[in-house]
Length: 120
Length: 111
Image (cartoon, rainbow over all chains, first blue to last red; front, side, top):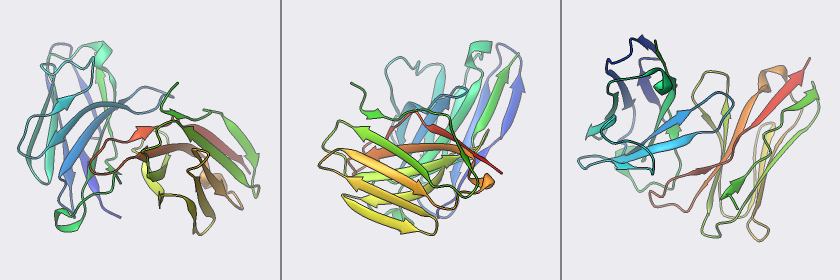
């Protein structure tokens, strides 16, 4: 299956600092990337949808100025948590859709390994 | 009513037993159905992918979709301790529509 790489896998930062998480599709062009947040023993909560070259679409209740998403190429999307606070501590997961050569996707998603953020 | 309903469990079974998981949904536009397996502190891994109604088998795993009843199932035969994980159902109407996820069902296979 397609491979999505996410980095870093875990990060600890001080309150007030910003953290950037990268999501890369390694063997296919991802026309769309999604960012999720997952709390312990909870399902995935969609934060935002990003399409290459355009602004991300944020879900209701997600602060776009706090969670900056950039999808500058077909293989890379980044999520920056700005001025992080302890309540932002969570497991952040990206996923990508799209097939080889950017073929029309069928809703099938490939997930990264996730990034665990701990804000002290 | 939530778009996708999935009983979170947990479900404990002895090794070798059949694991049966299911989800119901309300959106009749869904036509792509997926099961993801998620180990603790890892990202979800695509396990099974089915289009429209019918059955799909892959090794010890069988996915079933009944669109008329808006009901999907995942069966794991000859369960192994390594199958212990959380299983998430997900579905989509396709065409870049976002996935709707179930809550996930925690499965524990006891040796």
